[in-house]
Amino acid sequence: MENAIQTTVLGGGSFGTAMAQVLAENGHPVRLWMRSAEQAEAIRHTRINHQYFPELELDSLVEPTTDMGGAIEQAELVFVALPSKVFRDVIRNAAGHFRDQQMVVSLTKGIERDGFRLMSQVLKEELPGTRVGVLSGPNLAGELVQHEITASVIASEDRELRERVQQALGNAYFRIYANLDVYGVELGGALKNIYAVVSGLADARGMGENTKSMLITRSLAEMSRFAVSMGANPMTFLGLAGVGDLIVTCSSSLSRNYRVGYAVGQGSTLDEAVTELGQVAEGVRTLELVHEKAIELDVYMPLVRGLYQILYRGASITDVVGALMNATQNSDVEFILPRQGEGSAI
Image (cartoon, rainbow, N blue to C red):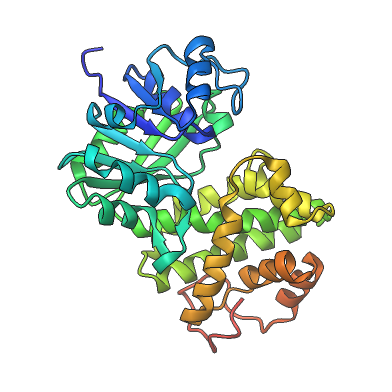
């Protein structure tokens, strides 16, 4: 392909594999790096990532590898799809293979505990000479590989990076929109995982559609309230990376965080739910960090506080909804009406 871009995806999980498949189907050679030599060898011989997509045959342009240095050094675009808890360590260990002005895009929807760092901040700290972006949106990996019509957001202050990512990923079933608000887009992707757990809980307990609609819209209010306190643009939450990602994650049984919430709602402990899932559910880690940060910043987040009480203090989803209903009634949409006391808005 004349306009092929040399690409690399770091991380052979569900979303990393899905993104590698999109890139390859678009005609771009892609090295899919993973830790496990056994997993890489299996994919090389069968063209299938049995752990995540047992029925998907990967495109011939996807090259599984455990050679981190070779994968990075030969790429123009590097996509990072690693769990947040290992993100910094992997990038730090690989830093010597990155070159100045190389384009690096985070696909990870999580937050680092130390200093409440988002993944874009980790990249800038560990790879100061690179050009950094974030991709986020309502992108369930299982639907993406089935060519369901999907859209996402590339956020970066670097115009050339935004355009390059749009060129690499855009096709008939995947549309990439651009945004300058890196912090807002990234916070939207991380925060919505918390509320997916809440939504799964509500469904497991048989709550009605009215209730679930209330929970989702109040989740959006909390997300935007918190993110703006951290410096994000509130308008970002009206787009794909905000309300779009929130809706799909809170409504689909394909969502890992939703499934954790659903399992807990059916009586499993948190540890049992996570073990049964067998994949990373970023919302569980993010909940702890956002709960702490909201207290530090004095940001009112009743759903975050309530979910924390459910998962770690034995409260019930009924108690959480009841607390919402008994709180002082205030404005519907954030930032439109003046707040009547920080502690009373729901």
